[in-house]
Amino acid sequence: MENSLLYPCNNRYRDSRLLDGLWQFQFDPTAKGKAQHWEKGLPQPLKVPVPGSFSELFTKEQQRDYVGDFWYETNFFVPRGWEQTTLWVRFGSLTQRATVYCNGVELTTHEGGFLPVIAALSSVIRLNQENKLVVQLNNELNETSLPCGTQKILPSGRKIAKPYFDFFNYAGIQRSVWLLSLPQVAIQDYSVTFQREEENALVNFDVQTTDSNSVQVRLLDAQGKLVAAAHGKQGTLRVPHAHWWQVRNAYLYQIVIQLKTETGEILDEYSDRIGIRTVEISGTKILLNGKPIYLKGFGKHEDFAILGKTFNWSVAKRDFELMKWSNANCFRTSHYPHAEEWYQFADEEGFLIIDEVPAVGMMRSTHNYVAAGSGKYTHFFETPTVPQLKANHLQQINEMIVRDKNHPSVIAWSLFNEPETTSAYAKEYFTEIFTKARQYDPQKRPLTGALEKNSQPDKCQCFPLLDFICLNRYYGWYISGGADIEEAEQLFQQEMEKWKALNLNVPIVFTEFGADTLPSEHKLPSSMWSQEYQCKYLKMNFHVFDNYDFVQGELVWCFADFQTAEAIMRVNGNRKGVFTRERQPKDAAFMLKQRWETK
Ligand code: GCB
Image (cartoon, rainbow, N blue to C red; front, side, top):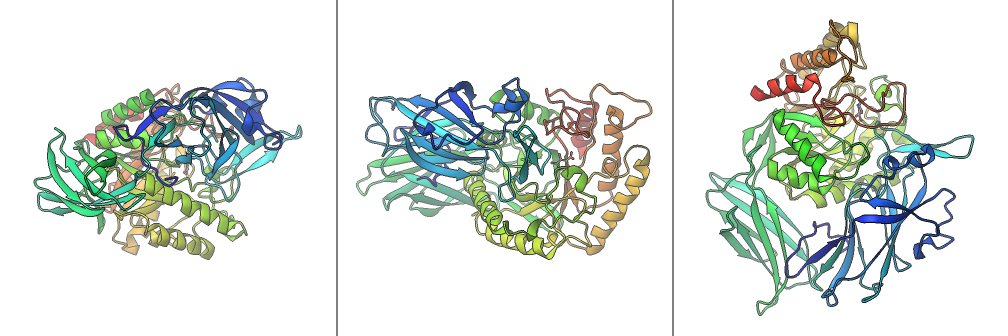
């Protein structure tokens, strides 16, 4: 069950308690915690919120920019009635890596900061007494971790992060923590795939359980009426006149899975909301339910003042309201899998998601936004650490797909953002990544990855691996910006002509294009950093996109301003947001709203 990433669900057979609240917390800059057995209790703890990103909470730079080991601790009681069940603790994520202890005993370790961690508690738990849960975390970056980066030691001996990516390295217990009570014999996982039969749908299911008891699967419509049922771990539900899950018109069914004994006694039940839809690539089109769909929207970060990367329902609600208002239909979870609740929201609201694994920073540059496009070759895939990196990369793709496979909103998997792709080493690396990843998704959704400017049609060795091509391009910002924007358009057209000449017969989606813009700046005529320039820049890009019918999507960089490491090209973070960090519109938001109303 450690491998069961099913989201918590409460019913007669399953129960859960949130452990969110104020926890104890301690930095461990000299990494002495293990030797001093902090797993038994932290010696001098502070109090911090869980979920929370610690960097946004404190007033000293040593705390905000802290890199190294740090520990969390809380105490809990096992609720009454849970004695005969199996007990688990489930973290939505632990960033970047962690070891989990309960009552002084190590339960599990996990690498990667954006996917769930589950640990079995039953063997160490004390009923009718307080139990101590301790987590040791570490937020160092290296070239085998996803995302990639490094550390620097300052003259004082203090360590700071040097990410090879352009967002703040927020860390901590940033998503909810649940105590779970599950039956002794349980449903471990399930997956669904869909087939269209004119207006009817076939829902094929595959259920994994911890033993060989029998399984019943029922499908209820939005009114709770039974529409189909079947027995067996694998099978097919026939849904006559199916309500298809559509963009901004999301119809969700309830799937109810029961595990039963021969005599019909129910041992476990898991239910979930699913949408029936198909996704495929056909020539230069992306088809949803067999019909072409043009992707309109944003690259999105999990980022907000004080919260950092903490999931928060109110921020999520506001973001979806803004995306609906702007007539968007899609976002990319750049550059890591977001909290599960984002996907639940997207399922309900009918938004499409390109789900991205944290494979960002694979080009060995602490200013990747400058290095991207500079032509600098970084030898990234030539080092002895590559096998470890590849193992972590595959593990996180697998965990992401296992976690998110049943969300109708997820239409594609992005397996990287802007790596080095021009060498034979990169080709070998990504060929293995894509070949293996193709086996993970029962729905066989398209695989893609976002290519930066160095990945030109005549240089990139990896684009043939992608089912549709995602391009991040900054013509008019990093390349020929401001007074040179005319030249930028020309250079952009030249590149597009090269893609066209290849006659690839696959869609191209722009997953990034954007201009840093300060909401305080207005300029007539426009100049860089002003709101007018952001509009001019976007219009120029649209002018180019609209010339090519194989361009099948535009996701602006970025939905909202976000925090990054300090740098001379960053004004309190990256300011390419169409919305401010406080989620108010810049002028460009009104322009996008208008374009996307009819696009
Ligand atoms: C990129 C990166 C993204 C950066 C963006 C920028 O190409 O993928 O992470 O934030 O450029 O604004 O420079």
